[in-house]
Length: 314
Image (cartoon, rainbow, N blue to C red):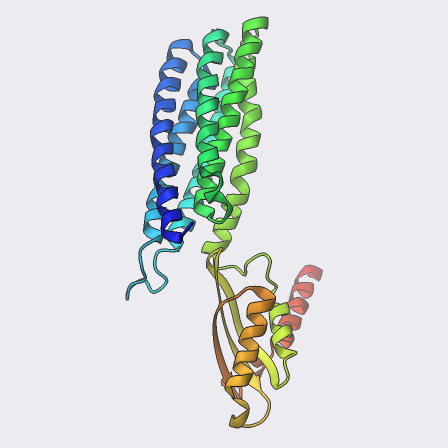
């Protein structure tokens, strides 16, 4: 499937997910209100948050297709990361909200019709699982779509929990199970949201991608014949599939050492070993820093470690 066809396919799936999720919200909220079920109403609230998450995912998906401009030279690739961060953050807040309401209901149980709760929650479970499956393929390579996928999968688990609690209430009459199950499902929601929150925050903070070691990259480049040392090394991701790198390299010899062959060798080595395709490399025979210690990454790293140990001892 071509990139354009894949993009259109994913957009249509996100649009369908929005329609299905809207129907779930209306059914669960009305049902929960009539039946006094915190399980159903919290699930409806969770679904309402996910409706916003799906809107964000769709909007970000449309933005990332836009070309780069003079004002935004990287294009809109970060739109999906911002959406993923907001989605996961709101999902964690929702988990806190459900916990608070669930604890209140544990202390003050309210009678619930287990049969109706089961029926409505079962429909919600089927719809949520269907939406998650619609997004599953796109979630493999796109952090933004993955956040929407986890939202909907989390909703499916919430709904299944409500189905189980409804059945238990129907057969035992223990209405305390309604808020108890909603508390247990909060753990599943948090488990899905936390990694997304951390990963998207790392990208926004321009951290070095988790599978790449900056010192290893520097050592690999310095092992290439003709390279003296590497400094001012920065590795970050515009989004997980677009990793960038800049560095300053000191080379042996005079200007004749600054050949295309050496530059090509460095680029090929970094691209092959670390998967970094977008590199900006400045080469020189002398360090341009006034303080020459900045031209030695190994010395700097050692200095930082020593400062850290001194801080710990004090």
